Length: 80
Image (cartoon, rainbow, N blue to C red):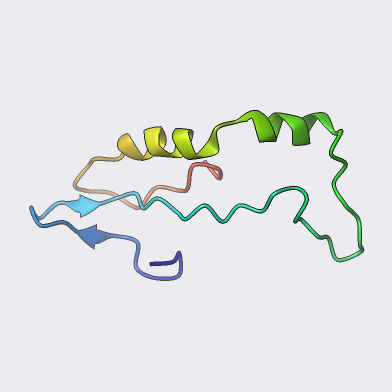
């Protein structure tokens, strides 16, 4: 299921998932190509900090918060 498909799904017990973990499709800074040919500086402090964050582990913890049976689908962890 990708983010263009329906995000709320019914579970067997009748509950609705209000958070769908998105596949890890985040571009690395090395793969990030800008239209004018600029590249990200690997020595940039924000680039270095982003590489230190365990995004997948944090995504799982974030997803566990949304156990509700009602409400809108939550935004992805990296966007929230």
